[in-house]
Image (cartoon, rainbow, N blue to C red; front, top):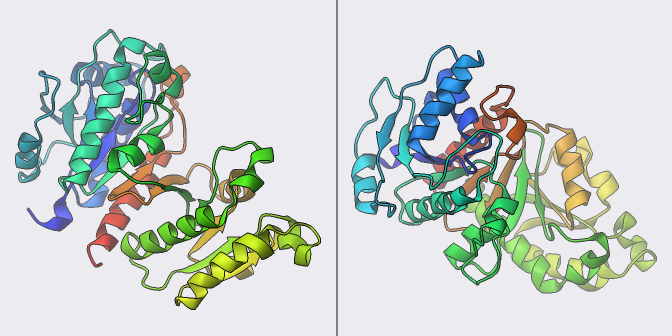
Length: 360
């Protein structure tokens, strides 16, 4: 099996949500064959069959797609068996290989059952193991319901309650820091801080935080996007990037000194720029990635240029991880109406990154 043929792995996440629906939609449309790689999917096999039949009854699918199921009845996934599977060609009639991760309790579309939260977490553990040992080329995560995992008492490695995909993969990989990036056809935006109240952001803009964020972005743009000299623009924290200190000192005292370290090292990176003019066509035309200081500084602009086509990335992991940009949409599960556009774009970006990373 050639390096180019390593699979893309989709975790379907919360079984009561639309994770399985959007996979089945792409399978029925023949779009999972667009990536010249096998597609592996983690889900409960019996529930996947039921969900497909529900979508046929709802008129969303004309027939149940064909897939190959790899049973995992014992609960502990056999990594040696997965490696053997990876050496085989998928049957021509099969849209994907289903790695069966059984649920503990009954599943009804739209109705959370916390008895199945351990199964959701097991999907992520399997994905991490398959990615870190190189069996799969990338992980593409479907939506999960954080509240269900918290209610079930699912914890991260450090003993804290489950807080999301990003923290799970970061801790499993032993990373001190990762960077959230969202990307679409218009731009790529990485964040120094993510889900913080606005009042807490200035204290989080430290030299170390900015330095680590920039280094991770530079490394992954080179290694996972194949850009030997990425062009990076950086937003200031304050209006007008501080207006020479009149509107804040963070740019002068923290941000720009760190950015000059990278410039001195030969990185093509700006000093802090006013965010209200950075996101204009003139600047974005000569930019591979933008680093914003906080969530609502960069992401509203990006999402206004392609909300349904946006992909969530985690930079700084030892493998590629992309994600859909929507939630579980419990009200749509098994009923139709769920768009598979975001999953398709997440698969497309994961595939492109996997291809680019082969050249580095």
